[in-house]
Image (cartoon, rainbow, N blue to C red; front, top):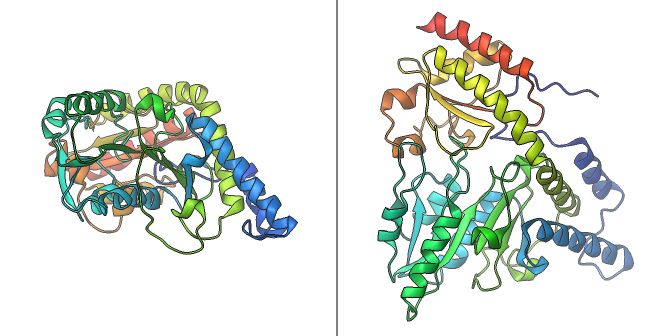
Length: 380
């Protein structure tokens, strides 16, 4: 059946599952449903399938297979990274950027935490970050690319600052690990964990045309981490529970496909983003991030207009956009990300997130522009 995504502009919330991935999941749900922990041959075959998928993901990240832990997505991976480290050091601090997803921000608030400020484009202030580093910091977590604005953080520079600090403080009593939530980055950016200087990295299947409830956490062998969930001891004892075989195979295939296509897709969507933003500005919009950002995410403010009304009016004529993070869409909570960037209440109240993806066409964008233009004219 042909699927039509012409009106869909919320790829940052969820991507449609690739048809090939659906077929893989169906096969392992119905035909090859065996438990990979079972001793009989059918179970052993599933174990090899799971390990083959792990090797495939490790190759993309240029890490060792045993450093990949399967999770149900980035929320679980982020929680495992933060709680798995910080619960061991009750007197230590965690540093997080001001623009983290709630699955990093909320776990961090369980511990002593400090916020790394960002500029008006949502990029962290490296000098202020360096000032925050001290002997009490055990973990730094900085999102790779923001889910609301697309702003890309300078992970290599952050890592270099951490390494410089550690070199200058060889007698520290605590470890100092660097983690990143890379959920939005996987379709467009380099994921070589060591090259980025990361000790841990979270990935999510539902952002890369894989299945929901799939993902992984890369954990360097140097990281001491404890599990959140105890049980049968799967995933090196760090994530007990029977593996979702079709999900992890589908995730590995989706990750490989997204990385293989990223240059081609980035170029095409970048051109669409330029066209889109030029037209949004003509309608009186203010683009909220104008520096390094993903080619598929545009956050725009229409001061004096209500973003919820704009979202609902667009929905009536067949267009799906967001008023911010999908996690907050129905909560009425104002964007913590835009606020941290110094945006006014009026800018936040009038903000929309428009995100494109693999199936977005020039014609789709032109139609959205026409529809939004009519709605803005009606509501001014």
